[in-house]
Length: 289
Length: 342
Image (cartoon, rainbow over the protein chains, first blue to last red):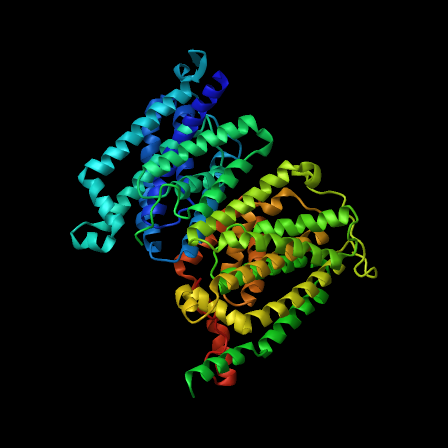
């Protein structure tokens, strides 16, 4: 029984992490209808920035996390303004090719700068080890992830639902033409959202170094996971991707624990079945465009 | 001239063999005799060309974007390897066909999943199928040899007459023959009314359905055919290199394949062949400059191609040949890439 609960806990932490990593992609892919396979590269950037700051320059871990966010967001907005912008109206094939190219470049570049082996971030002592809560082993680091990611999720939902920017974004997504007719600067809203999503990915990358492992092949290895979250979750709200990431996290951890030999088989089968059953995602609705 | 006969005239005109095409194949054949020390890489190019042609059939002609075409390549590779290893079908040509059919069955079964949904769903499903097969191959390592791959494959002579030699001469001409035969068939298919209906579907599925083309059935058919081609390419890989390992299913293989096709141009059969040559040359060049980081430059090529625009790029490349042709024959541009957008 406690093993089940521990697995559940780990699965939730894993799922939350996936959500933070992938929710930027939910915006670009689901809302802006842009296939960004290079999303993992932004996550990797954040992870490596955090690693360099903490390990080489001796920054405290919690001070390095915001910087991981900022650096990934800065790179995101620079690329959006210079390159991505031109591809919004192009075919999906062009977008796929372009972002695969970017992914390859990022993999080789990080390999060149930092070497190809897996890197670890030195964690403060307070985050290491685990404690027992009613007999259930709770990892401190995972608990922290759940807290941070939970707060982020609530915050995102609030921003989307309550603020002026949230309503602008929703309007821009529902009907870009009508939105710009109402005086909303749609490209600006998209650029800001894109950068924010990249920043979140960077933060997720920094947090995930401990759990998912961080090496130059990160963008390729986890690309499919991000895509699963978005396509299975649908894109009409952030609740869909959130539930999908939890499902994926719990399913993956449980799958690895109970049927280790089947490996990732369970996840891929689940994804294909769900996509066949509901092409717009479990919680999706028919896209506006 | 009425519109319908006009369309028919153009279709027939395009289906005719041009001198350029004959020259192209003669050059390819001549390469086999001119560079006897380069058989291995040339065989590699031929295999890649066949594999790319397979993707072109579904991407360039039917407009199905696939990120998991390596699935069929892998099935073909493992089928050929297992057939040879266990001596079930010893004769290479027969084994090649059997391996192709195995991939074809998989293609037929999965085509129903792929034709559902839009681009994004297709991307995910094709990618998922390839990853699924990779996971399966890893799981059943007692059959596939796991990460070590199938080892100790001994190829029997072709038709029981021509043995594979260690310089790869037999492998090259064998691959060339297979490629040429399959090319002839693909050429026939894409210029047939069936091929024309595929183009109609690619341009506008709704309109194609409205004029009476059974869209889903056509897509299933071409997807199955493409799977057969990819399976043959995979089987050729195993037969000429005598290994089959897990990386036949790898995502990089599918991604590289798209790059090859895009370099060559989608929507005409020579695109795959030219793309394969250029891609391998680029790869050789980059890996001599930076052995470990050639992927960076490949990525850069992709990004530049997309940013410049594929159509514009092909126009630039064809500028000089067209100029010469115009000077010599006094006609308007003869060489052109038909509808390279997908």
